[in-house]
Amino acid sequence: MFFQQLAEGLGAGAGYAALALALVLAYRFTGIVNFAQGELALLATYVAWQLVDSGLPYWAALPVTVAVAFTAGMLTERVLIRRVESAPGPISPVVATIGLYVLVNALAALVWSSALRAFPSPFPDAPAGLAALAAAGLAGLVLGALALVVRHTGLGLVMRAVAADPRTARLSGIRVGQVAALGWGAASAVGALSGVLLAPSLFLEPAMMTGVLVYAFAAAVLGGFDSAPGAVAGGLIVGVTETLCGTYLAFVGADLKIAVPLVLIVAVLLLRPRGLFGTAPVERA
Amino acid sequence: MSGLRVSGLRAEYGAARVLHGVDLEVGEAEIAVLTGPNGAGKTTLLRALSGLVRARGTVTLDGVRLLGRRPEEIARLGVWHVTQEGGTFAPLTVRENLRVGARSGRHFAADLEWLFGYFPVLQAHLSQPAGTLSGGEQRLLAIGRALLARPRLLLLDEPLRGLAPRAEGVLFQAIHAINRHEGTMMIIVEHHVATALRIAHRSYVVESGKIADLRTRWRW
Image (cartoon, rainbow over all chains, first blue to last red; front, side, top):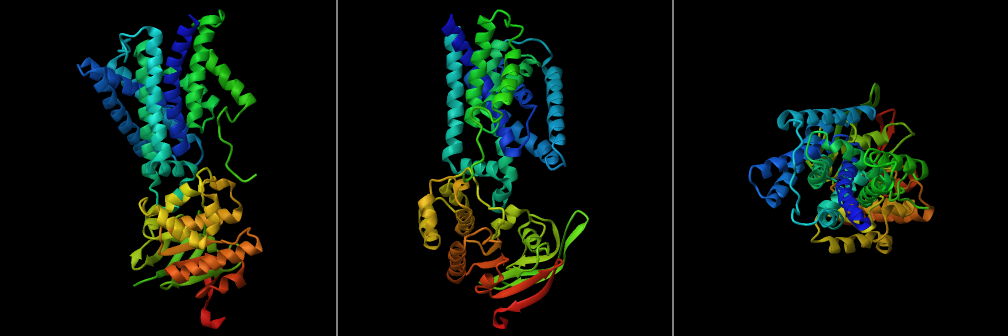
């Protein structure tokens, strides 16, 4: 029973980790917290459902979905974010992403209705616990590949340079706007993975990612909002904590599970505002 | 027409005009030094040349117009600006910082050897995050990264700021050697006037957003 719950917690945590990583990526490249990250993931998940529903095999639909999500993320940065990020004060980008949240959510309801839809599991023949672990493994593979690109390629180096200091990057001849768009594309693609991994257990409907976004924020804050590995670790911790609390603490149950990440957010902000893995500024002591 | 030509350069921050029609030239392989009191507009002038500040007037490098372009485009045209704030990527290692400046990965090892000829101190810190270097070492790193791009024109804003006297001498010797051996044009904003003038081909005195005086090497 415990190991079954642990496996399911890790499976859910992998989904939260992917969305938390998407939040962190968008934040690091543009300094903007994207409240619409979950809804972009929702849109991608509907695209995946539509493709599978049209007869495309799951494993063919997945890369197409990720590519669509990547493009949608880049377009969002180019069309919306770039226009509002230079506005005075930090409020305009926040309001813009909240507006995008509402817009995408309404669009999903308009196109696909509010009906609950069953979403196929990537591992339909495996028992629940094993399928959850396999889903976590799949997320781990994709996130590991992303980490390899960021740490060990020229493109990754340029992306890290832009994240570290956009002005110096500009003065070094780096097209910061293009790199920021790539960052948002990558964030959206990783977010799509979150939606696709969680949809089999949550069922697909327009409000599916609302709660997941709260979990992802908790994971990102827990890991340190500027730390990609922290976001992944935070997601797994939140997933396991939420699942075990819901199962073993009678007063939490299914109804209060959503409060677990909120308690985590407040506790982390009070005790360690930089998060578990948040990086201190690199400077000489 | 080779070299940098600046004519009637004007720039403002909001309603406050900072540059009031600056004219200057930097010839092939020359070093120009900008001196003048604080707030005269020297840093703004460099920022206007590198595209960080919007400006009006005419600026050409080897006949190519620079004004109206974005900083990254201007850098790609060969104008590299090392700001007084540091200009390094703090979380990246020294090697990664230098790789950002290098023209290509294929020649990176040879480029590093070439750079260490001017700044040998960087060799010992290749795996260290740039943010943990001393102020002087960070300045060398920022200039070194710019050099790896083989710029036509290097804009250096107070390169000696915060350096120990011995480090000042080392840096200026390196800057002078780079100019002589590589033919890199430079504009240097520096408050250590006597030190800067030793390597300058021409010196402009900036006051209240205008060029108040021009001196060429034979006059000092």
